Image 1 (tube, rainbow, N blue to C red):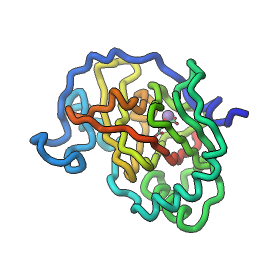
Image 2 (image 1 turned 90 degrees about the horizontal axis):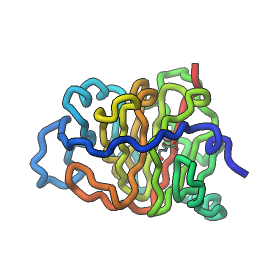
Image 3 (image 1 turned 135 degrees about the vertical axis):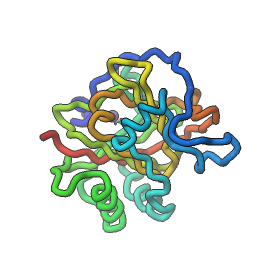
Image 4 (image 1 turned 90 degrees about the vertical axis):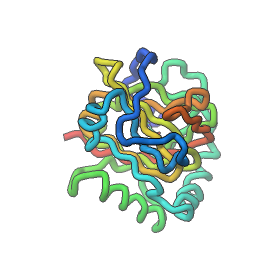
Length: 230
Ligand code: OGA
Ligand code: MN
């Protein structure tokens, strides 16, 4: 049985032109600092990074190792019962298994409440179940926009187990793009135009290079909260 989210959520877009110039836009960097001290958002132009800046956030170490452990303990038993799916060529996602969860233990509920309080306007009605997406080391997410029929203006995701790179590409202008470094245990938030007018994707391991630095992709679990459309 396919989950509601799998079937309804995403509008898959064909891959965009990948010949994009690499331009560091959010802050100066020497290239010698460890990755975590570098800017986490790169873009095709300084202007785009500034314009979209308020609609795209990456918060490093949003959760502690203990909180990551608590989430994994709660999620692993259910995930392990499923098999990774590789063969749906038309799916937006390759090499994944997924689930949804409504009820959480207290430690996880506290983490999720923190996500909700920073990501969504107070009182904004949220999609009840939290979406859990488990990407195999070889898994990746192709460019897509989440269905506007089922999801509202904001998408907030925690990254567990692995660093990864999310790329946003403007739907009608593939020369406009942002890349986000999503460190393990970080939270990302996409809002408004960044959510509606840009495709998002998670790069496969082979393509996982951020600002000239290789970012090894391991198995990655994301815990994603969404609000409801108006
Ligand atoms: C999705 C998606 C991103 C992530 O499931 O629609 O874009 O962080 N996931 O896993
Ligand atoms: Mn998505």
